[in-house]
Image (cartoon, rainbow, N blue to C red):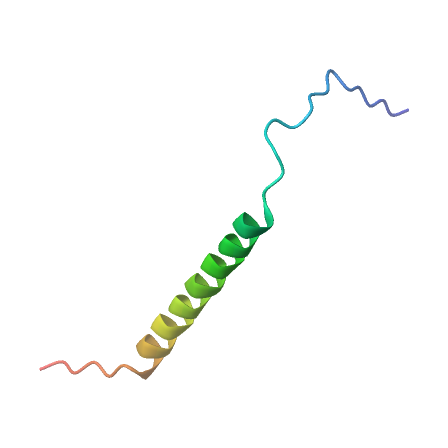
Length: 51
């Protein structure tokens, strides 16, 4: 026997994001990903010399 109980339900607070907010968020994610890729490539190509 299984039982599922819902103690309460609340509607989400706030408003839906606007198209501009979504566009900005996606753009920031793309920039962040490009930055991480660039750093990854720099680290991969780096040569460390110990003397």
